[in-house]
Length: 124
Image (cartoon, rainbow, N blue to C red):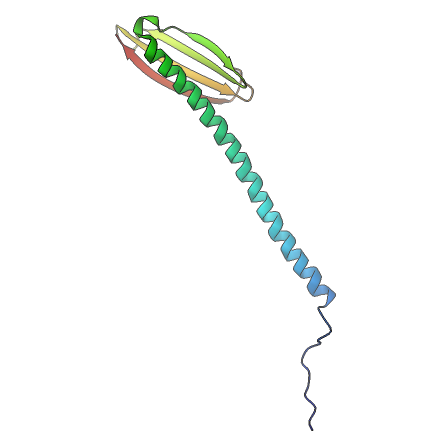
């Protein structure tokens, strides 16, 4: 009988193979975790923008509902958001009111760099 040559060792994995496999898995998991962190921060920012836009739209609807003669400037605070409504009479023309609603957050003051602005014109 001839002896068959064994080309590999059946005793198990080499230590270097195990370390290399762990390193590759660790790099992959780190990349996934980094991506998840970015996605969570983006979702948080999107939620804040959506809330600010909703507050501004609600204020515009309020002005629409109270009628032209009752529209005036108001300032309100809602939790972490600061809403400021500016009403300019006779701009851009006579018998019109330009309403600008700004909503600030993080912090909820006019010094915040996070802001949403909606603007519309009401006519008599």
